[in-house]
Image (cartoon, rainbow, N blue to C red; front, side, top):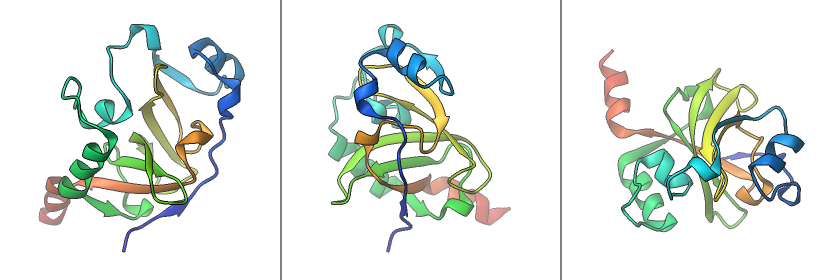
Amino acid sequence: MYWKYPVKTLIDTYDISNDDDVLYNYPQLKNIIRGEDMPYGVCYDEVLGTYNEGISIGEAYGIVINEYWNIPIYRANEGDIILYSDKEDEILHFAKIVKTNGTIRGTIIRSKWGGFGIYETSLVSVPNIYGNTITIWRKKEHIFDEVKR
């Protein structure tokens, strides 16, 4: 059993065709790095540090399944990751938590948006093509560190 949460993502994909559109239409977003300043890579490269490894999103999901534990939102911490998926459980986007109070509404994430830059946003302020369900994951070594405390 996975801890899964339905979400309504708020960014209309039709409103964005470049970083300027994103920032103009959604001024609440914080742009960390613009797309033209980014090295090649995708969301999971940014989250998992797999730049230049040439892996697919399916292989990235395999890394998560093998090296991370699925956790409930109330246990989430900075550095945990969020996977976005659709109704068929297809993984569509990866993000990293930068701040949370243990709720969906109170969680801020950082993620790379395709060919655009890296954005820091609320958990739901991502393009709606990223799906309507999230799961939260913590690196297994951090689970054991937490138990020792």
